[in-house]
Length: 285
Image 1: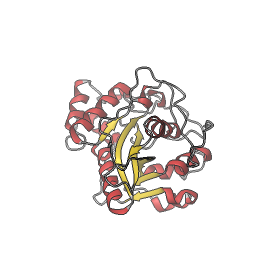
Image 2: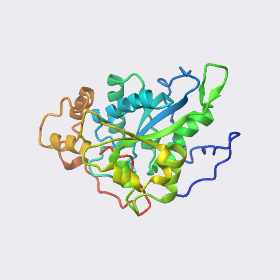
Image 3: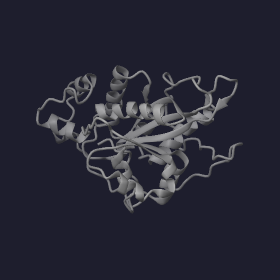
Image 4: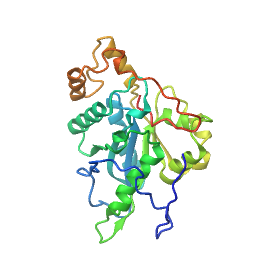
C-alpha cells in the first residue's frame, strides 16, 4: 500500500486523509456515538473490528464487551463507540456471502444485542478491496476531521483515538514475514494501535516478540471464559444441517435460513491472490 500524503495538525499529529474513493449514498452511522465524554481527563477511544463476518458470531460481539471491560478496569481510555466494518466482496474469501447479506446480518446482530455498537458500510460498499490501514483512516477522518473529535463537556473538543479490535490470530499474521507490508504495520500499529483478544490455540507471546517497535500500542485482552466459535465452524454446521443456536444471534439464524445461506458450497468464492504485501483483514472467519 502506498500511503497518501497527510497534513500536520496543530498538535503535530498527521491529519487523516479524506476517503480517496467516495461511495454513493453513503452516510456515516453515528446514532449510538457518545456525544459528550463522561470524564474529560480520559482519552476518548473508538473500537473498529474489520473482517468477513460470514456470518457474525457471538464471539465477534463478545470481543467488544471484553474490550470495554479491559478499558474500564485497566486503562485511561473512555469508549465513545464501536463499529463492525465487513470486508468488501472483492476480498473473495472462501465462504464469503455477499456484502449485502453480511451487512444485514451484522445489523440484525447489533440491533438485537447491543446498545452501543454500529455497522459501518463504507468498506463493504466498495467494489475494490480496502486495506485495513485505509479503513482506519476512513474512521479517523469521519470522527476527527469531519466531526472534530468529541465534546469534553468543558467547552472544548478532544481528538478520538481510533484502534483496531481483533483476535489474537491477527497478531500472528502481523508477525509472519511477507504477509503485511512494513509500511502498513507502522501505519496501523504506530498511528492507531490495536486491542487484541486472546484466542485458544494462538501463541500470542511469540507473535508479540516480532512486533516490539509498536509494543506500547498493542493491548492484549485475556479471554477469561474461552470461546473458540468461528464463522468457519458455523458454516460447516449449517452445511451439515446441524444446530447453530446459542452460537450466533437468533436474528442472524433467521436471516440465514430466510436467504438460504451457507447450506452448500454455493456461497464459496475463489480465493484471490493477495500478494506478499497485501494484509489479511482482521480475522473474522
